[in-house]
Length: 188
Image: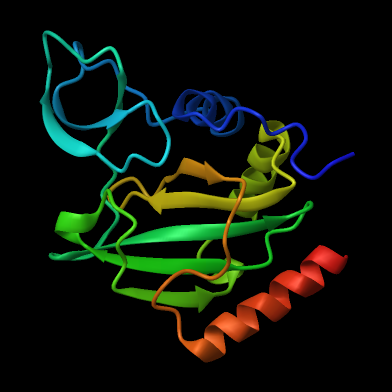
């Protein structure tokens, strides 16, 4: 079969549905019942228009989803997204993508680092991420994973089935190493 043949729907709805199946929880909240901060995002992919809103909201947008506010800060002014590579049934590497707090919902990183999966995920979490990829139909691609500082839980917030390679602001040496790791994993 073709790569990612089963991966047709990469909507945020689908991501949340599969997270709920695999992890037993998802990012989705009911904005009319939830109390406190939440994130409002367009249902469309790659819009990067997330914004923090105060709930409850009496008239939520129909074309948006509302998600828990995940605290992935590394410091007062910076957040980190964990971009996980998937090749077949493997998770060969993770990129750490650092952004300033005011750019947290964009793709604008100021630093990226190559990291080992076992340094950022437990064995159980790694198995769940692979189970998610399989259930999602993702044979090859990348997942955006956020770890909440308060609860320690991981949340898969985005699926990218057409990754373009190592992220911006990764050193040349780390980008080269990443490509070697990915090629090896892809060969297997």
